[in-house]
Image 1: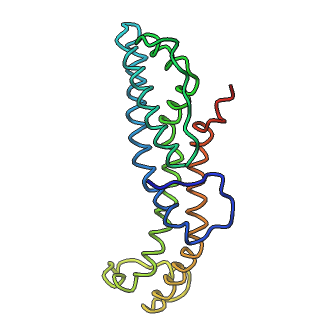
Image 2: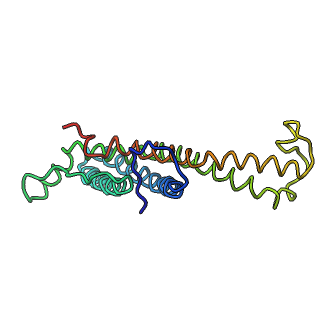
Image 3: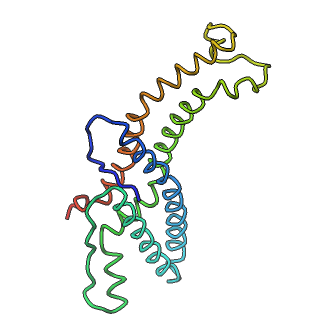
Length: 206
């Protein structure tokens, strides 16, 4: 599984592009699953807590959030977290330790909210890669597009010559390709920074 150092602030290089892209692309489906599962579990747990059925659901949800947190700590390469130990080996004591550990609630908050930075980072990286791939290959498929509208170069006054349009999109693709490492690096740090603020050992403040 790809790891990323969220504290990295050095100039982006193409050697990191693959790792940053893989981190962002894999984070979105994981984040979406975590949000759906934990938001549903929390809603059910709180809604049914008055009947006591919701209590085990809530605790199970927090344990799932802890599992997502452990996975994300591996992805951002931060130190493992040592959770609060139970006072005894009884089931009740272990459940109390989970509920009363502040980090359990931070794990749950991360699981429920992580889809927001993940979606932003995913959208940006996918858009940049699409611009690069689309611009560089436009000459191969642009001719097949319907001719009932104008291309962007035409609207900008570059004319409707096919090869001039091809050249325009190649220039655009080159600009996106040159900025792609920096953009992918920013997106990866943006997503990893959110996780680090909630999941790193230094975030607990106690």
